[in-house]
Each structure stands twice: as C-alpha cells, then as structure tokens.
Image 1 (tube, rainbow over the protein chains, first blue to last red):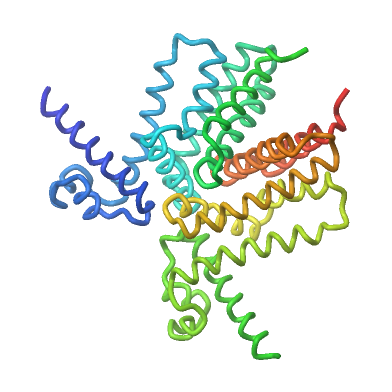
Image 2: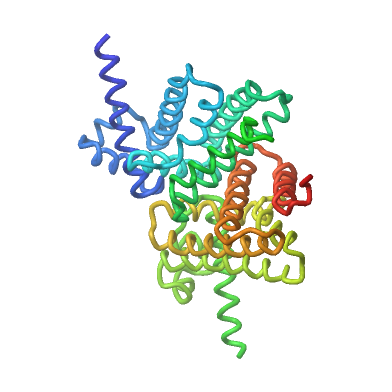
Length: 193
Length: 193
C-alpha cells in the first residue's frame, strides 16, 4: 500500500518541521504558513494533510508521545532497573536533537495549562508513564500499589525538575543523569545497608 | 511623593491584568490591546507605562519574582527548616490565586526555552533560590557547599516536578506538600535513625 506509506511519511515530515518551529519560536510561533515554509512546501499542500493549525499542533504532540513509547518498548528485554532509568533519563537533553525534543515537550506542557485538549493528552501520558514506572519498582521491591505509585511519581517529578534546570538553569546534563541513577539505585535498594 | 506612588500602583495594576491574560491564554495571547482591555483602560494609556509588549512581558516576570522574594523575606524569623519548606511549597497551587501565579510562572519558564532575555532573568532567580536553600541546609547539617547545593537542587527540582503534576497531571496539592515535607525532614535528619 505505497500511497498510505507515503501519506504517513509526508505527515511525519511536516510534523518534524513543526517541531523545529516550536523549538525556535514556541507554540505561539506556529502557523500553517510558517510550518509550510520550514518544510519547503506550500500552505495549500500542508492543508491537504492537516485541516487546521490546531489539528497540526495536536498531531505534533501525538507523534512526540508515540516516539517516546516506541523507544521505551525497545527496552523490553532490559531489567526493571534499566527500564525505569530509561524513562527517567530519556528526556534529559544530552544532544542537540534531544534538546529540541524536550524543548518541544515543555512547550506543550506550558500550553496544557491553558488548553484542555493538550492537557488531556499530556495527563494521560503522565498517567501511563507513572504506572509503567510503578510496575518496575514493584518488580524490584516488595511494596504495595500505592507506595510504588508514590515512589514512581517522586522519581518522575525529580526528572522533570532536573530537566527544566538543564534547559534553563545551567545544570550540566551529566550531573542530572548521575543524580537520577543514584535515586534509582536507592529505590532499587542496591545501596541499602 | 504621591505621583510616584500612583505611577507604581498603576503599573502594578496593569501587570495584574497581564497575569490574568497569561493565565487564560498563555504568553502567546498577550498584546498591549488585550491587556489594556483586561485592565479597563485604553491602549494609549498602557503605552504611557510600558513602551512595548516585550517591556510589559519582562515587567510581569520581574514583579512575579519580587513578590516571591518579599514573601520569602517575611519568613526571616523562622527556622531554617521552615524557611526551606517555604521556598519548596510556595509554588504548589492550593488556592485559585496561587494557581494563576504558578500558571504564569510556568508560562514564563516555557518562554525561557526560546527567549534569551526571559531565560537570563529566570536562570538568575533559580540560582539565588538554590543558594538560599543550600544555606538553610548547612544551618541544619554539617555538609560542604557542593553537597548542600546538590541537596538544594534536588529538593527544588522535586518541587518543580510535583507542581507541574498538580497543574496538569491531576496530583492532589496536599499530597505534593506532604511529599515535600517528608523530604525536608529527611534532609534535616529529623527522621534519621
């Protein structure tokens, strides 16, 4: 079915151009015209794939989450400790593409504060991430659901806050990663007396 | 000097209207016209106080930080533990005005990712906050500067991440506060064996 593949690939190319625009100008800088320019196609062509600015913006968030889920699913053969660490560390920007990805993610987080559509999608992604992490914690330690979720939430919140400090506070990415590794080892109990 | 007082008060009123606009529409929704409307004055009148949209947006961040600093300075007579907890907990939204304040703060954080002027102001505020918290930790525990800063950064990052989850992830504000209290007590050593 080559036409469907082409359609999906062209949509993905447009979303990549959207991410570049968001990383450079924020979501406020997004218009179909600006994204078409960044993608090197006409505004009419972009409307063939996305009906409106709103539809394009939501598709950008959807693909961002699907990429993160795919990268996580690639760790399926790893230990619970390493899978937990993957979730916590994957957003810390250590490369330029990584920085663009997490800049776009935080732009969506800020938009979620005032946009219920974006908030619902993000809130669900956070819920799924917390449940996955809680599962890995329970595979390492004998704790009940409530405690595992509280530990997962604490680790994920710490990862969010450290990532923000790498992005705007001048924190070194390697130090953020080292902090998260130490926290995971503490939760795993490998540094317990 | 009543005219200077009036001038400062009118500027503050305009900034309050700006915050309302940011909380409702994000920074992307800000224009001098929209803020003038929210403040119930003419666009010409607003230009008497703020030359440009950019100047108004930066003044909004400046007043947000000065208010937070003033609230912190009001805790000058409290214990190091309580002053540290104040810094960590003050941003967790427990009231509607609190929610507006922190929504505006996160809107500025997202803008900082793509706006160097906003990033410089925020980065400095984060640096000062970390130094204050590190000082309180050293008043409670015998740790060196580097370790105190690392502990402060970890607590502040956790507060940022939990706050974000209260705003968009459905986390209960009281649970976020209870988590932060437990962390401060652990750092203070009051729950040590």
